[in-house]
Image 1 (cartoon, rainbow, N blue to C red):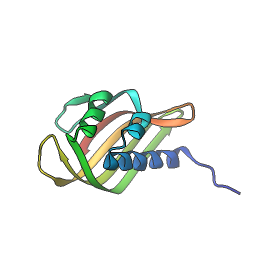
Image 2 (image 1 turned 120 degrees about the vertical axis):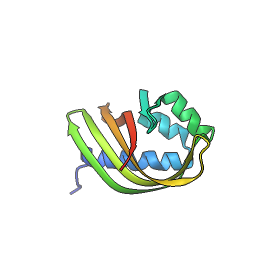
Image 3 (image 1 turned 60 degrees about the vertical axis):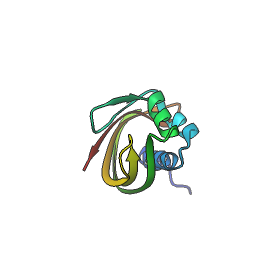
Image 4 (image 1 turned 180 degrees about the vertical axis):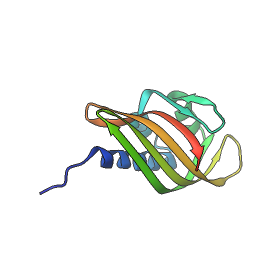
Length: 126
């Protein structure tokens, strides 16, 4: 008997899939798992729409070298939810030096045609 693939497990897998794609600059996967109207709010308060965000990853403005997940928190309410991941991330972004941060990403997520996608994210430290 197989174990059901719960929404919570799907969202945990989505978080890990996103990080794998960021680390390898897999723009195709990132394109699929972010909604067309996705916006990332950086720690600085800058709002970055999906196309600009993906361009910055592709062009080496946002560089992610390693990620270790420490916590994942999930709330599901029907086809919408919240996914918050806390990870130790080694990165160099916007021309800054390479550092390791305790990065928290708080996502709004939506289940469309049976698949969860990222619709909004806010970055902070923890």
